Length: 191
Image (cartoon, rainbow, N blue to C red):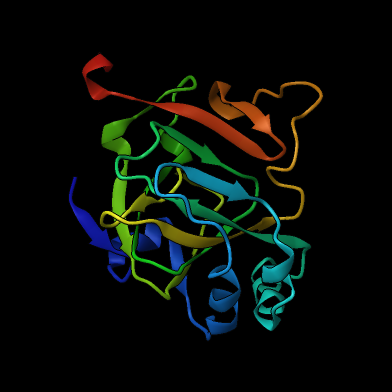
C-alpha cells in the first residue's frame, strides 16, 4: 500500500491538519510509557489535560467536553481491526506514524475490506483531526521504534463497556463506550 502524506489533497476526505504550537502537550506526553512490544492506550491523562493546549483541543470539539489521553507503543503491521467513534478524533504525533484509514460508508454488513484503506504518514509534531466518518486503527510505527501520540475524543469515549451491546450502522457492534469496532477482512474473501 502506498503511503501518502497528510499534507496531500487525498487526506481531505478523512480529516484535516490542525495548526498550532503543541510543544507543551508534547512535553507532557514524553513522560508517558512507551512499550517496544505492544500498544498501550489511556483514554484520559491528567498531565495532558493540565496543559494550556488542552483548552485549544476542546475548541476543536465545538466546546463540548473532550478528553485527552495517549496511544503509545510499537505496531509495525497494524492491528487487523478498525474502529470509529461518534464525534471526530484529534491525533497529535510525537513521532512519525502511519494512519491506515477508510470510510464508514465502506462497511457492508459489518465487514470492511483491506483494499478500502489508505495509508497516511503523520510527521512528528503534526496534529490531525479525523472526521467522525473515518475508520482507523491504532497508528502503525514508522520505523523500528516506539511511537507516542496524544488522542483527543469526546469525553467518556473508550472508558467502559456498555451494559448492553449496541448494534450500530451496517451491523457493527459497540465494544466500549462510543467505540464501534470491526475486523478488517482480506480481499481474497471478497466475492
